[in-house]
Image (cartoon, rainbow over all chains, first blue to last red):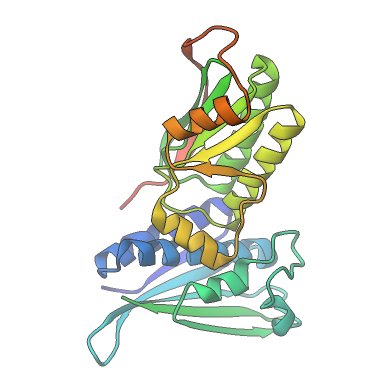
Length: 132
Length: 144
């Protein structure tokens, strides 16, 4: 399966990203609960892009590890204000956006791999992966 | 993109809201407003939200469900969320969401029973009347 890039430019694109991830996860043979985890992570991280950076994109990369196990990697990138304190942003309940502060720490618990890079003033990239 | 509609049904003194499709954020917010205005208009005492067809509940929808329950409570109505899929429940807990203030039960039957027995909401006005109050135009995301 090929990688897909989804533009995140308004709130409706969050639903589009969710749907795209669900379809890919089904195609890759993820079981239902993992489909739900991935779809939920996509929703949380896509919403962060819209909320904090106004626009960006999600890249969904079907992948396979050396053992032949299918996986799905999702990359969320934007050129927004960035995250000044990643340590704080990863703590449950911390929010600067009026939300519940579950987006980043909660998403991390739903995937096998989680990486966040951010340069204040330049943008943020969050990369997650889960193996089927 | 197809237009889809989320009905709000009134059965006795309970509003029943069957959510059948994935909703974007705006659709969720509009649904919240509809439910509250129907509560005011009809004097219903209970709200039963059926999410058995909902495949994803993220922190946004989770918060709106809590908000609906809190707002309905202020309007003297109780809210029950029914039919959460097991995969959704697992994901919600891992995400760290509690759905504060929201009672959840397995199915519509249990939901009606809870509203009736625990919260004392009787079909006082018109028994088993079952009519559609309003349709809400939302947007559906097509599966591709």
